[in-house]
Figure 1 (cartoon, one colour):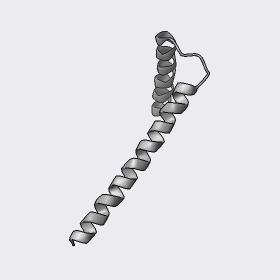
Figure 2 (figure 1 turned 120 degrees about the vertical axis):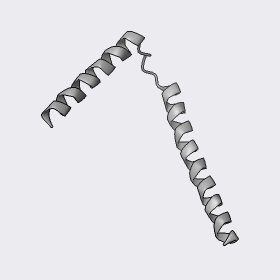
Figure 3 (figure 1 turned 60 degrees about the vertical axis):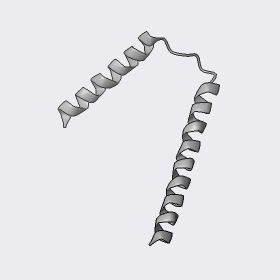
Length: 61
């Protein structure tokens, strides 16, 4: 039983390390992205559009 617990812990640590690698890669791609940064107004406008679209979808359902 102890052996199974150790294997489960090792598996969980490997999975966590893999997830962290994926997150780090996404962050690196984001930092290296040559597209210009968005202003806070542009971000808010985009979020407002997404929210309005979600509301329309909810009303149709």
